[in-house]
Length: 397
Image 1 (cartoon, rainbow, N blue to C red):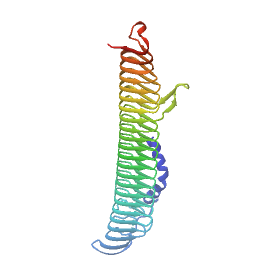
Image 2: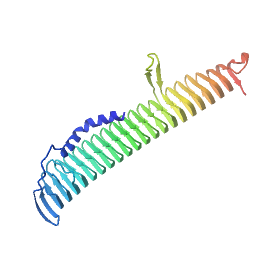
Image 3: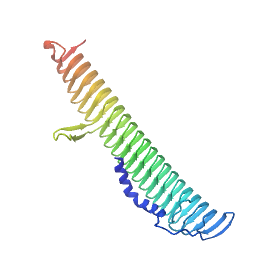
Image 4: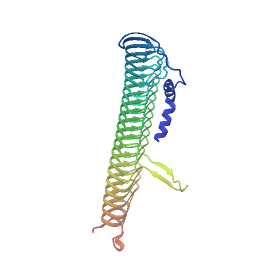
């Protein structure tokens, strides 16, 4: 899923990146000519033209072979190659900026591009692009892109993308994407995606996706998805899915699925129905699913717990678990291997041992240690006619 979102985002800001990287990859440009007019003493002063370096003010048409500027650098046209350039201070490119390292305030009409780190306030009409770390306030009409870590306040009209960790406030019209951890406040119009852990406030119009842990307040218009643990407040329009545990408060009108354990307060609504790959006739219903569930679990249709349900499980149609400790309520069926506590449904089917009370139209227990109340009540460990009784049946070990 991460790859899908990554491709989707890169299609939209590819134009910005091609413009930005085209600045530094002009085919076989000639050796730079450092022709300039300078009013400077010991490297301090004013330079007009393509000087190598200056401490002060430098104004040039096309930067080519620049070494460094401490102060103000203004370039009027698209720069050529400046692989050693370090600009500290205010850098303005009426078309674009390019240097190895930029520290300070950088403004590019189309793009701000750094072969290394980009630090400070960086504003690009289309993109800000760094082959290293990007730190500070970064604004771009299309995309903020860092080949390393992305730290600070990052706002991209379409996307903010980092090949490392992303930390801070990250806003994007389409997607916030990190190849490492994603930490802070992250808002993507369609998606927020991380190949590592995602921590903080994470919002997306479609999906919040983490290849690691997902922690904090996670809100996805369609889904929140984690390959590892999901912890905190989780809200999604269709599904909350975790490759391991889900902990905290989980709310969705749709499916809740935990590959391992589920704990806290969980509320789901509708279910999904999928056809079994090995059989055209078999369908799988997924509502609220986990290996173990602890706390309060409510689903509008189905609760299916592989091992133990501890606490309260309320299913619109069915509650099923290998073992139930606490309370289970369903309009049609409560099914368990072992029940310790209370269950109520049209049918209560306890395949092994019931300890406690069941209420329904038909109650079945292979081994009863408690009371059954219903139209028909079957306790297999009773003898003779006492096995099947109307209204009430009981057995106490």
